[in-house]
Image 1 (spheres, rainbow, N blue to C red):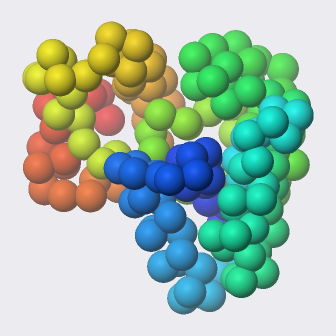
Image 2 (cartoon, one colour):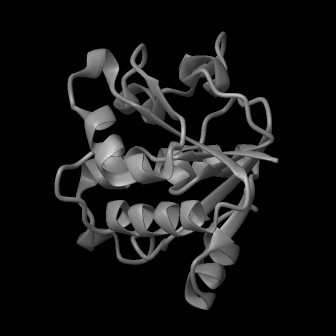
Length: 171
């Protein structure tokens, strides 16, 4: 079985924290098990951020294919679902897998050939909006709308997150 893991949050920052740190730990743990035929995908338009180099540093020892999308800006992919109207996530990232695991629901695409699985870390920004910047809150709201529309299989990392998903989403 081929599984592609979306690694954007793991490779996007040179000093990851929060979601990025979680993504790194999850991906390394899955790759260590060596149970499936894995690949990793991420965005880095025109190679401007060095995501490929960070991916190689973090995951190179696992000899896993790195599928870098250099033709679409990640920020555009999460803000505008129309980027997937004429081209699927698979086409942008040049991936072919049975299952696509998105380590953060923020990055789920509206067009994908394959089964989608998404991880949700928390939705506590919904009842506590004042703790989240307006820009981040807007991106998260777009992601929730997308998730409600697509209804991917979802992993909640805790019972608390599971309750939040049931309370604040339609999935």
